[in-house]
Image (cartoon, rainbow, N blue to C red; front, side):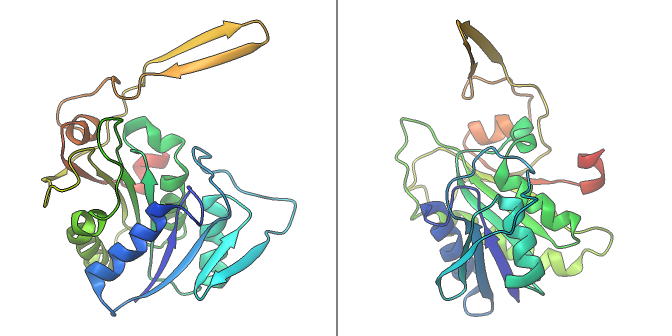
Length: 239
């Protein structure tokens, strides 16, 4: 099996290295990994693409490439050239949650969505963070193993539409052996936002940790300490 790995935090992001390690932890040597990632951080770029100029590509090590473009550019470059014939795409691990309405602006999720639009199964992986919890990465392979295994197995079986899964890890003690994993729908409740106008500037302030949340959906479940997994139907999401 050939996998295309990407992210929106850039080629040097620790979350990207953690994702590659997680794939091999889950699959052993039964997978070929090709990384195509932005040359720098592109967080919150949504589904933006680069047009009107060629994309610069650089090989940084065997099967690792950086692109001077967006996460969606990386998926297009990967599926079209650098990782042609890839069986699936995994994007992440994002340093911060991508829950609920975050999916509209997330570059991490946009990369997965672009793959699904192209008919390739895709998984987006993000990690909720809080200031009071140590921001480590060593636990990520352990916490994602079950989902990666299930994603790759299910991707071979589903025939009606390509998988588009969104996984979020909770901000809890990273020494926790295995947090509970909950399958749940996405909470599309708008986030509370305050606008401040000072002379020639407008500043928006979001209360991310205090955002609204509906019982049983991804925001509440992840903020409550669970790994959340949402199976997003592409036709409904785009509609």
